[in-house]
Image 1 (tube, rainbow, N blue to C red):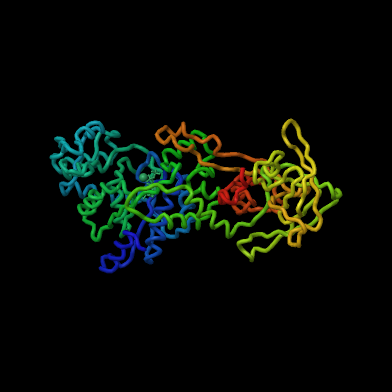
Image 2: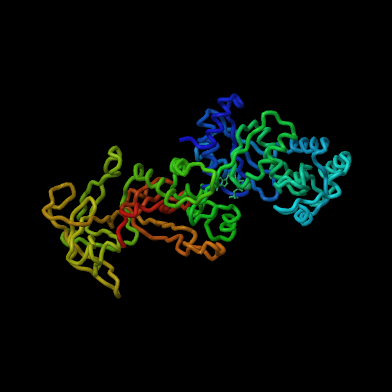
Amino acid sequence: MSNFIEDIIESDLKSGKHKSIVTRFPPEPNGCLHIGHAKAICLDYYGTAVKYGGKCNLRFDDTNPVKEDEEFVESIIDTVKWLGWNGDIYYASDYFGKMYECAVKLIKKGKAYVDDVTPEQMKELRGTLTEPGKETANRNRPIEESLKLFEDMRAGKIEDGALVLRAKIDMASPNINMRDPIIYRVVHARHHRQGDKWCVYPMYDFAHPLEDAIEGITHSLCTLEFEDHRPLYDWVLKECEFENPPRQIEFARLNIERTIMSKRYLKKLVDDGIVDGWDDPRMPTLPGLRRRGYTPSAVREFCERIGIAKANSTVEAGQLESCVREELNLTAKRVMAVLDPLELEIVNRNEDFAEPCLVENNPSDEKAGTRTVTLGKRIYIEKSDFALDPPPKYHRLTLGGVVRLKGAYIVRCTDCEKVGGEVTKVYAEIIEDTKSGGNSPVKAKGVIHWVNKADCVDIEARLYDYLLKEGDEDKDFSERMNPSSLVIKQAKGESCLKDAKPLEAFQFMRQGYFCRDLKNTERLVFNRTVELKDSFKPKK
Ligand code: ATP
Ligand code: MG
């Protein structure tokens, strides 16, 4: 099924309006990219450029010298490539010269003028949805005078805010964006690429169409909030006399439940130290999702599934999770790790007992093969897999009860030790002839995971949850922080985990999908990417 953007592109190709398609992804380098940007990249690159054999530029919209940072430029390039994008990189600031020429051209045509309105006056004179705006006296200033003042602005003779250049369109337009918007302003600030070369900077609504036209973009895809700006986009290109101008098409922004994507908010979380940087695995940023264990293919699959629409909506967080879970189910190696260790001693074996047990690496992938784990006299099991006072239908270990140790034997619990009310150790006996793979004389209803005390490794498992609590949507986000968005477990893992590579994915059986952290590599830190499907989780 094609979407409305594909329909437009196909008709433009068919009519010969365009011979090939050129799109762009235009981030402002004032933060790391987030999952919403992934939707835009997937559409600009995979959904159009790749699909129609065209190209997609990565263009930094770096026209605001005050808010931008070189650090984000590198991060954005890395992230876009990680998602699979391939193409040319451009910087809007490289077009400042051409943009300035376009502004001069507008003044000469009587389509722009220099004004001295303050932001407050501008607001007042702009009018409302029901009332037209008011013209300032400078609107009819002679062209020569505006040219001279604009030159003074560029030459550094004017203070910040003292003069602005405005497009001369229509103060009575029903569209407020068309009421003589500011297109250039004076800002004495150092630009991260241009240095001190400029002290006049173009406004977004003037700069963006020019950037698109200069690069020969055919279809400029952006989010819905720009719909009302489209007449201005078209006006700029027409008055600056670009032939075969690009066409702006809007689509719905991605919103996900319990997830705030605005960069202003994400930046605050980082600056206030609430999270451990832009790539904290709880962040909805792409560097965060990557560190959490999301793969580029899972992110692309998500963008594909949510599709492109003309109306804003909110996607369930579970949709993103299922994309990565479905992929990891096919690819992640299964291992055993015990997050809340409880020692179990096998009473009917000697201290030197060490029996190899064969376990599958991935039941969803035959080619993944098997590995051997050792069962010794002492192992760790999960605290929650033993209950003194079991609830109904508890199929795990109880005093006198039986359970199968994954890949090994059925054991019967003979005793336990307690300190205070808490069980600190359990004793169990192996029931002979019950090794996995054989014909067992007895049956156990439950299977639990375990690790061997003698050769397991200490690991740190980081369990993540939403950064925001559920509900409270009208409250400020500082009151909505989820206090258990990160729970750290000092856990025990199967010995093979010591060779895990950064970002290598595993399924910790019965626990969830985890990957080795990209940072903290001096220790064995594993980030939980996503939990298993609810029905596979042990019941609490
Ligand atoms: P934010 O509001 O998070 O600061 P932005 O729109 O200011 O985002 P830009 O760097 O300007 O961020 O965005 C680059 C491109 O990504 C734009 O074309 C924008 O429309 C698109 N984009 C940003 N957020 C989303 C989103 N949530 N869903 C889809 N596209 C998005
Ligand atoms: Mg923006």
